[in-house]
View 1 (cartoon, helix red, strand yellow):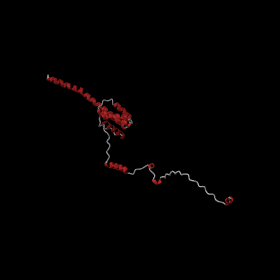
View 2 (cartoon, helix red, strand yellow; view 1 turned 120 degrees about the vertical axis):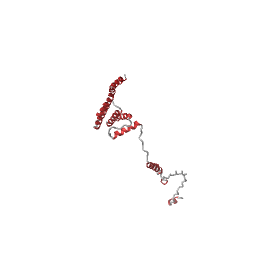
View 3 (cartoon, rainbow, N blue to C red; view 1 turned 60 degrees about the vertical axis):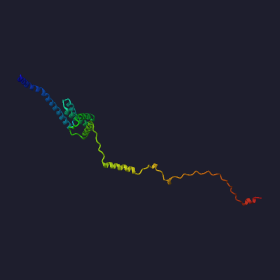
View 4 (cartoon, rainbow, N blue to C red; view 1 turned 135 degrees about the horizontal axis):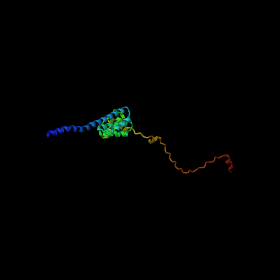
Amino acid sequence: MRHSFWKSFLVGFPCLALVVLPPAVGHAEDDDKIWDAVYEISQLYEKLEYEQAFTLIQGARRLPRGVDGEVTLSLYEGIILCEMGLLGPSRAAFREALLMRPGAELPEDVAPKVALFFEAIRLEVTGQKAVVPAPSEEEEEEEDDEETEEQDGPVQVHPEQQTAPVSEKRPVQAVPEKQSPSTVVPAELPVTASSVTASP
C-alpha cells in the first residue's frame, strides 16, 4: 500500500505544479507589459510628446502592477504635468510616488525647474525643512561694527528743529511808558517898534 501511495503522489505532483505555476508566469507577463508601457512613455517624453505620453500613462494604470510600476508611473505623470504647467496635479502625482517610496528618484534627466519642484515636494512629504546656514564670525563682526557706528555717530537734527543762535534773535521792543501831560509854556512874542509906539 505504501508503494501505491507514493506512486499516486508522484503522478499527482506534476498536475499540482501545473496548477500553481501559471499565476507566477502570468504575473511576470503583466510586469513585462507595464515596463513595455514605461519604455514607450519614456520615448514619447524624449520627443516632447507630453499629451500622448500622459494618455499612455492613464492606459498603463489599467494594467496589473506592483509598487515599482506604480511609483514609476506616478513619477512620469508628475514630470509630464509639470512640463505642461499643471503644477497642482503634478504635485499630487509626485506626492503619491514619494508616499509609497520616499527615496524615489526621477527616472529621466529633467529641466532644473522640475527637479527643484520635485525636491521641494520631497521635503514636504518627509517633513523636513530647509536649513538656513548660520552667519559666519566675520559677518557677525561686521554687523556689530555697523551697530556701534550708528550709536556713536552724530545725531542729525531736522532743519526745522534747529534753533537760531542768540545773536540772530530779534530784540523784543519795550512797550513805551505813558507820559504825563507836560505844562505848555507859551512862547514870548517878539517886541517890535510898532508895538512900542502904540502904547500910551
